[in-house]
Image 1: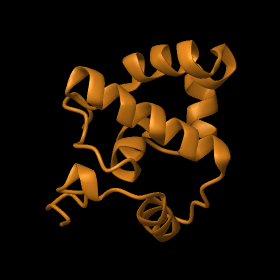
Image 2 (image 1 turned 90 degrees about the horizontal axis):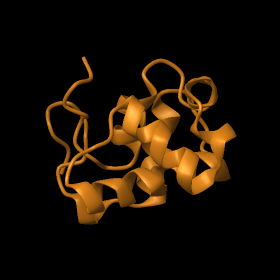
Image 3 (image 1 turned 135 degrees about the vertical axis):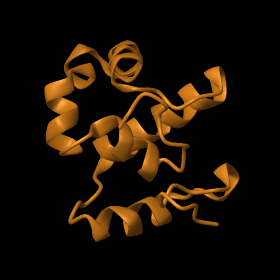
Length: 100
């Protein structure tokens, strides 16, 4: 069920437990805010049919969770490195197309 890039190959097979296991391999412990963001990313995918890159992810999170949680600095604190890619990976979504 895991693809070459370690992104889940089957969207319906996603679970919070799987996301937590994947996060642990990166030294990340998922809290309530992490999980809420992963769920918003999955809702975005369900609505638009693609994984959100950083800009649409921030906009969507601002609308659904508040401006403070839609800021890129906040996302970098929760998901260090490349937040959009890491969120897609943990949410069981395909890698965002414009992320390197």
